[in-house]
Image (cartoon, rainbow, N blue to C red):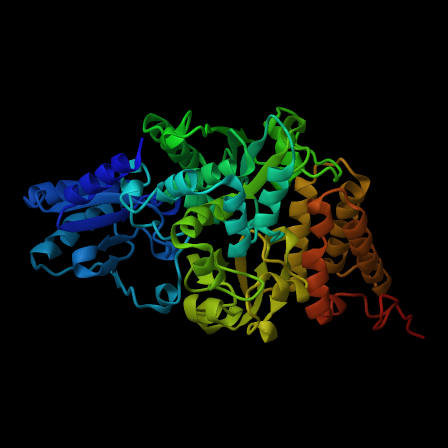
Length: 544
């Protein structure tokens, strides 16, 4: 495979494109609402209307506004049709001949779409994720070609540092520094791992990227491997994502057939292979050391750090671990330049961030916005606010590891540092909205119950501490607790946060702590008033 071959494939793909393209969402969300049957009926209707010479029905990835699926777009009309059923596919095709339709029609200028800036999701909803030719036609694998032909591994790392990209998996560690550490570590064998073990409740960003644009992740991994000196990669994806796994398998096979994975990529000395490892769905395996143990065929439990994976990771070898969204950001950076990427976002949080917007909000789905966009712009303008005229009460970011941000802080810009100041984190990108009917103690109990179920049990603070915190939260909800119990809950939160072995236990108290910080009155109202009164600084004061 050489540059000319890429150009030929791209030109053939462009030439084969028909005058009118009907795109039908074939991501998991829409497929659960029969979009596969919609696509089949659209194809049949196009043939029956004798329009097949000029009309293409294309299955594409996620079209973002998931609450209105199945979604179908017609580019010649600049139209987005919502909640399309298999039965009204013929009616939709008739609009190509000037007919009318009663199918619900959306607006591409709606704030949900208008405020988005797509880098990671640029190809989502546009290309067929199961055809490598479609990816090549939109400059796919050009970044890998440029890197291999024009840059040394050291220059690749330096460009990543300049971009300011921070890992999108939660902690926000600078990607360039991580790459540089692995690159500098001497070893005959190194590995690259894509962490696709997306386990936060309400989160589906990584799944959608893998279903919609798998080659962007493969290309990003290959560039990273060249930069750090690795020749083997693994994608660790949970078994609950069968469609993502299927499309990844197809993408890897196609890339190997065209020589874009394997030996002597682009006729260079660079060799790189990618294999898939399927996880059983343990939340703790999203933690990098537990993930590596699972890849090695062991029980997925974390180990103490240091040594860090960059120095001693998979099978004791230097290992680079980034998540799906991080790798998907890589090809655009090397196509358009580090300066371009660094010009987006805020001073310390560069680029865009993909969020799964869910919960009690009118518009649910995937959004990608520049870092620094405020929570208010996301949940009130893009999300359309709470349904049924209710008021937004809080926004949960970061899943079980994050915190609940109250409505009075909705003008907070979404970036790593601003969210941390409010006791939350960016996380991988789950964003759950709660309205004024939500009891925040219930929210804390829900996430604590999740952490109890998902704790691997290796360390006592997490195994026993989360159980005790859950017990106290349930005691409060059952109106059997006193101010002393609440003080004990806060003490346990502090202990578990500072003594747990891995990130699961260290962040498990966050939802409880954030709700205590901003919604303390809701806890106090559930306490037994006849025994204890109001308390301060974690100490109960008995009523005389």
